Length: 41
Image 1: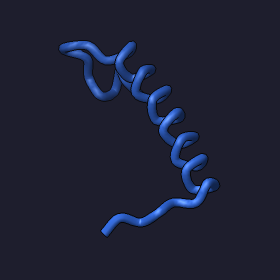
Image 2 (image 1 turned 120 degrees about the horizontal axis):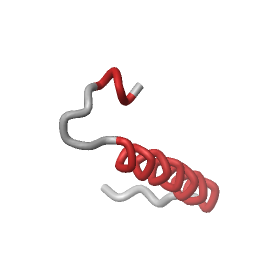
Image 3 (image 1 turned 90 degrees about the horizontal axis):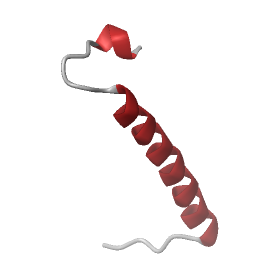
């Protein structure tokens, strides 16, 4: 079943998507083969 989202819900989804994209772009710039989890933190 498809749920219709309100305009406020759609805007919140856009904003959260933009935040996620920024986080992923930052992670991509840091992570490379051979890096440890401690180095990322």
